[in-house]
Length: 113
Image 1 (cartoon, rainbow, N blue to C red):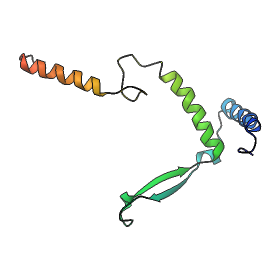
Image 2: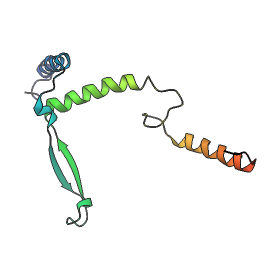
Image 3: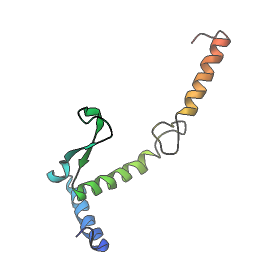
Image 4: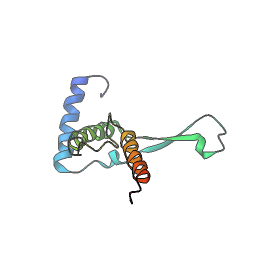
């Protein structure tokens, strides 16, 4: 049903998600996943040569995405402009460079830190 008709999918999921949201009760099936290990290259007797993925129910996975995008749109507005870590399109590298420059100048000018 979810693949066959996109408009039907949207109607069904919209009603379902609104019900979950207003009642604040997530179905138990959405909270459970099946952990699958996928082999990577290398010696398969070593556990670090496997990668784990968690298979969730389709409605639960879509609901998680909806919540993620709702939260992300709010959180991205909240941090100060100086905050760069863990933000899309930004990097901590510039801040590390500035901090390192300040420390080097403090050492060069004999400032105590």
